[in-house]
Image 1 (spheres, one colour):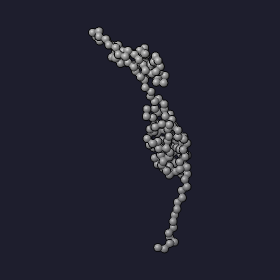
Image 2: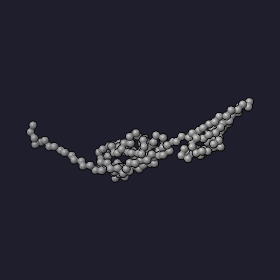
Image 3: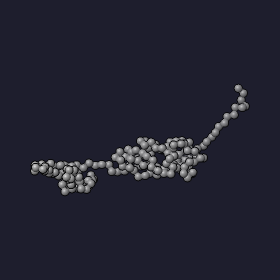
Image 4: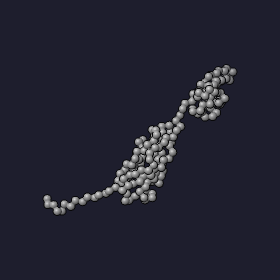
Length: 171
């Protein structure tokens, strides 16, 4: 496998092409690259060392967000939804015209409004009670998911105000 490597004058050994664990290109395709490294010093003394270099697998797969992209949320509440991915991830907001209206717990994926929305007084960009934001997630290997667009529609809640008139009661 020596032809797959190069060595610098300072002894730094590198593969000429990046290794791929899933598609090894060593002589017997087992992912272990074998080569002899020979050295000679300034007075002609030589030595040789057999190296077996094993390539380890790394996680190269982006996480996938599997939460619904359309959420419905009653006015007056902060908490919205728990986001879900196909593996352990950290979460982040990553854009959208209404991103500033939201917070996300980076470890749990709990998405919430910064201020409870009021159906009668929408603060979203379109002033139509449909809030748009983008999230993404990062797995333990540092792979970042595709951006995931979310639309949160705020629904009207029945707001009953109760007034009790005590003026007709004697104390």
